[in-house]
Length: 283
Ligand code: SF4
Image (cartoon, rainbow, N blue to C red; front, top):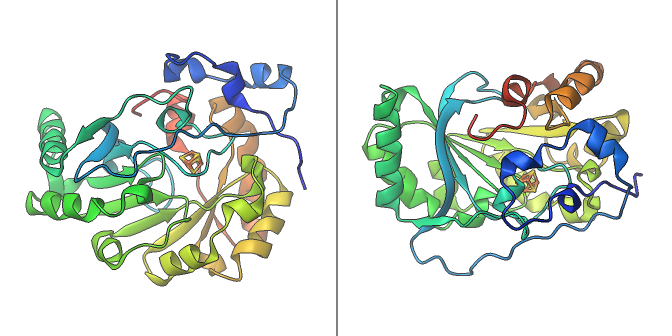
């Protein structure tokens, strides 16, 4: 089992560093010493009233998993409970890097979404809405109201990207059309006892509307999937994706992970947004 991990946040100490400056190419990563990984998670306000901490909204294509290639409106919310070492959205949770969120009401997010679609001459029925983060399930008490309002305007398919650590409410189960659940393995720098919440994974699996995407870089990861997750979910629901938030790292990992998927009866997904854009924002 791996013990030591790189801590990318130590390269970017400035409170005001833009996410673009997070471009940790592999050469830089290889130059720093391995240190014990301790994520610096910004605590979130316990009470947002009825508002949601939106970090950004943008149009792109779903880059991973079952709906890869689907035009999509991404709504990214701040804060995460976990803090993976290789996270490509540290600007949503790292106390050194987090961007001030806009606390927006359901009306404001709906208006913003509609304007974005109009500016691209797109109809709501033709795009998926992808709720992402950070960890959007931190806000599950307020998301159903947003989804109801957006459905009234013609948006008709809602995906959520979650780390699978929060058991969904009945309102969330009713609201979400597809769960892109990405449970974490110890390659994220944290112990598996921290990463796995069996009750939440089982509840998401029981919706019958979920894939489980694992970020993988070696055969060690397959052993962890089998030990911690296969008792909870079926192999057919598993998708492997290569670790790496630089294009170079994605490409170097793809062949290995592709073969691991084939050998173990899992599906495989590239991460198109990284292959095309590296770790550029809003892509
Ligand atoms: S769970 Fe997702 S958003 Fe949170 S730190 Fe890990 S990769 Fe980033």
